[in-house]
Amino acid sequence: MMATTVGQQQLVAARAAFAEGDVQSLAVLPLPLQHSWQRSRAAGVQPGQEPYYPPLQGDGLRLRDPEDRRLARCVQPELEQLWAAFGGRGWTMFCANREGLVIAQQAHGLEDAPLLRPIQVGRRLGEAEIGTTAPAVSLADDVPALVRGNEHYLQRFAPVFCLSEPLHDLDGQVCGAIDITGLGERDPALLQGYFRQAALASENRLFQGLADVHLLAVQHDPRWLATPLQGLLAVQDDGQLRAANRVARRLLGLPRRGPLPLLSMQAVFAGASAAQRRRLLQPGPAHRVRLGEGSAVYLQHLRAPRAPRTRAAAPVAVADVPLRQQQREAARRAAQAAEGNLSLAARQLGISRTTLYKLLRD
Image (cartoon, rainbow, N blue to C red; front, side, top):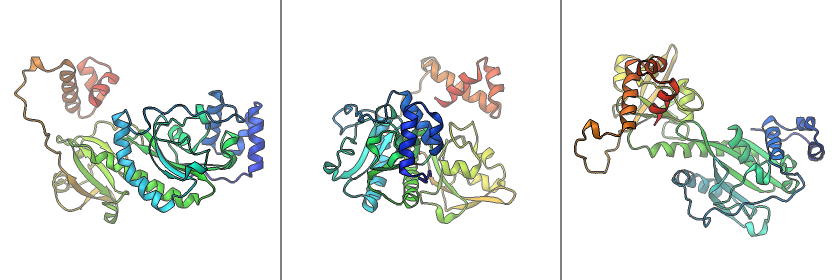
């Protein structure tokens, strides 16, 4: 979390100097805020101007994008809990999607706060419109962000406190941010802990929405299972790892961000005994699984793939299968035959590694 340690008057002077072209004046700001001020200026925003709020998308109530609706459903319970603890007149809590569009919100009393009144579901709050804000920094740099007082690029927002936490999708990419914004001061260290847990809980709900996978929970300490701090793994019926939340990625040494490489559960838990590996996709209580020398996790099978609700279709001749589907199946078989060596699989298929990767991720 970025802390405010620089005096407000020093920040005012830095803003004025930066507006005149003095890039060195940015040194008083944390690096993510320096980047944000630069993006705001590059977009043509001037520190002394009034914020520009784009028109609402839709009627401000119904979201057009199904991905936005899905994320809003996952976040809303957490916003309600946070609001019950920290909400109040002159404050708002909201979730913005990856483009900075507000998709969920908890607020009241904003009629007395003209600065906050425009924050509504359906409104985009980007750096190109209103300059530096905490959610804009979280979305751009994938970091928890704190922006208060004259750390805002626009002078108009000097009375505002703004704290946010990024949200990640199933591929570990930033897909949004949850934020508290208001007039006054709050304890940033306290809020950060609560907002991080709310973000983890929201991300875990995204995994609950996957119907065609096994869902597994992992943690070093079994007391953290069934909490926002549990790691989650989405595993296909063939044992291939499809997705992992950020806790699981850290626990298992997987890439922190971005799509996962092609991995089987046997490879992920290569240090486990044969008996432990046989139990990975079997229902039952949490059990200990060895990762390596001196390291283990507790793993629990939470759910098997849900049966599709549609009626069974008649067998389809290969000739009737769409070409793209045939290509995907061929790519999957080649990758399995090459034991995850995508370069080898691509050469065998006569396609580029990039094309192969796209087919595997479709």
